[in-house]
Length: 111
Image 1 (cartoon, rainbow, N blue to C red):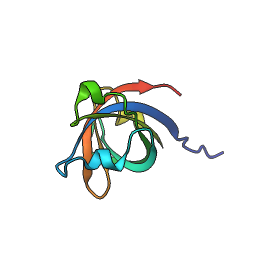
Image 2 (image 1 turned 120 degrees about the horizontal axis):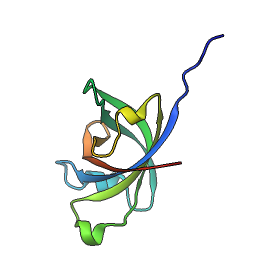
Image 3 (image 1 turned 180 degrees about the horizontal axis):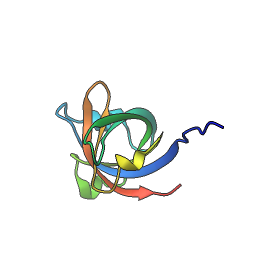
């Protein structure tokens, strides 16, 4: 009997800063809306990058204390081993042809 790999659903929050294009990250994910995007992560051991298709939501719950140059997103994705790329403190980037925002994973959310 063949065993099939099972993909895992993974949900986390990240604190991001828009990329060099100004507020590209903020404009791409308006507060309160969900958008399918590509998220890039780096493997803990090999340091190789991998892209994941994800649902990204800008929580819109930090503009008063974060300022205009940071925002918090919730990211939901599936993959074979997403925990090897997106642990607390790991680098994460939103990607639309190039990085539009990047930052760090701040917490894991359990589904």
